[in-house]
Image (cartoon, rainbow, N blue to C red; front, side, top):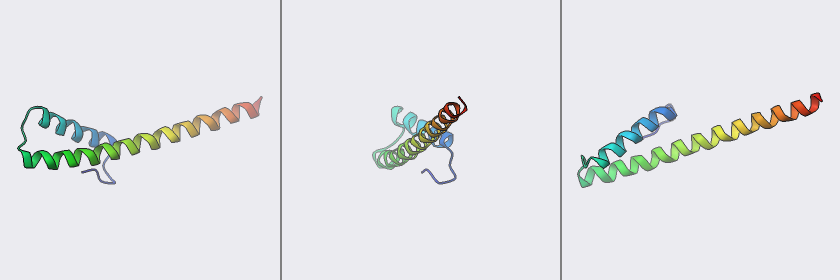
Length: 72
């Protein structure tokens, strides 16, 4: 499960491990349900991190563009 201190990379590695377990049929039906729920949480966590990073990058680029225009 993704925690607040878990990094994006750690969450992705865990998600990749879950996918590998599912693809290799390592899990019984009870484990599968739990892993799928964990995977959903990890996907949500990673998506939120990506959206936040994207917004921050766009903000920085916009601010840089405004500073360039001001300097002209």
